Image (tube, rainbow, N blue to C red; front, side):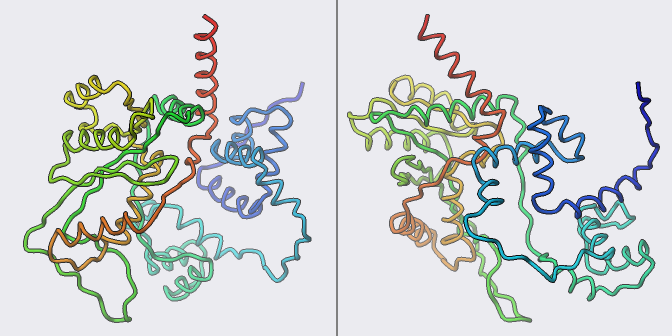
Length: 368
């Protein structure tokens, strides 16, 4: 029986090795290794451990292969032109990419973001050659990097995440003609403008006037899954009364021909208020499905509300709140429908497993 040999390699040396290996398998080569190992019966955990990648990469490539995306990419109907003139990455380029993935504090910098000057000094210390910050900036632009704003990411660690997503997914799959389905959320409309990027002359900066006192209204909206239409109510407070008014509006507009109304909402406290529960008790055909905690990507109406912010509330110059609300109403009336596909997270392996369990439980109930 062969003996097992374990090498003692420092953490820094292993990080350098990974930095050298990853550019070599750029493109579809890693996906090929993943699929070949899966075809030989290896589990996703074993594949990820063997290839030094994440399990998410294994699941993503497996799902892409099952949907036919990878096969369509690798075996096209028309011949692919050969790409020439692409030289391999130099040590300077590889080290620059690796540094951008590390926090600056790791290298002794008292800062949270890399600047071109800090990158130049760190590269000089590690490689031994002198680089200026302008050289680093030109190289970053040539590699496709740009200076832009980051985005916040929720925790998305609900223990019932997969089951909640599976329940929503199976409800959509089994939706009947006499049933309606709505995605629900709230939108804040502030007179104080949301500041973001826009085109302006170099050396100048556009000034957005601020109100003497900020005023706000709240919109509760529901996105119809079938039509893509947004039904909404606007009120002065973001409370359970606003949510109940939206539910009453949906029930009124659906009419008696709709037997069941499914409303998908997040876990915000106004959705689970006692008054809302009493209202649902008096209106049995309305059923609320709950989204996982801290999972805004699971609600497609967030994308529609993002479009409202982009077209109406960012960098606006309205001095009166009612004019801003009129802009929002006009946008909702003239744009749309907002017919979005179900987010990819509803097709994750964990969600698919829970979906199979739900179908099995339903079959057992029917058989009983």
